[in-house]
Length: 167
Image (cartoon, rainbow, N blue to C red):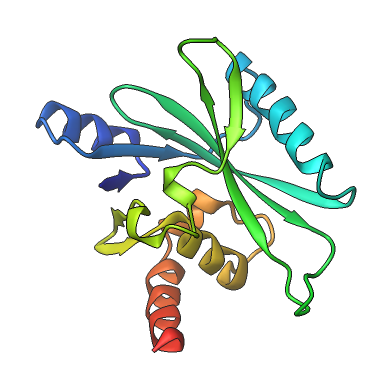
């Protein structure tokens, strides 16, 4: 799937009948109902696991049919190996019940690597876990948001480093 971070490029892809176009936008302070109900659902889920955590809004993912907010959650407590782990949640609206649900969707199922959805952005093919791992490790300023990072040369450089590190 192709991931665009600029609305004009995304709209052009839609006009050109590109079937796998997705727009990923930075959303500073969303206030719509999907966001509010999704945040409530996410907080209920997280509070069952820990009382000390951080939540970071990554952005809004849109295709021709739907939109989702993507969030990263990580606990302030390290796991048994001393690592801080993170999870990415998406909010979506259940069309049958009308309820907004926060969950680890198909985009982020690290336990089922075969079905993880890959995105092509700036000639790099990767999933959102890798994108966030690079962002958390290589962002060059604390106020640098996730979408700015994806558009920066640091993204390309960190992808090469990540692949080399995994090799």
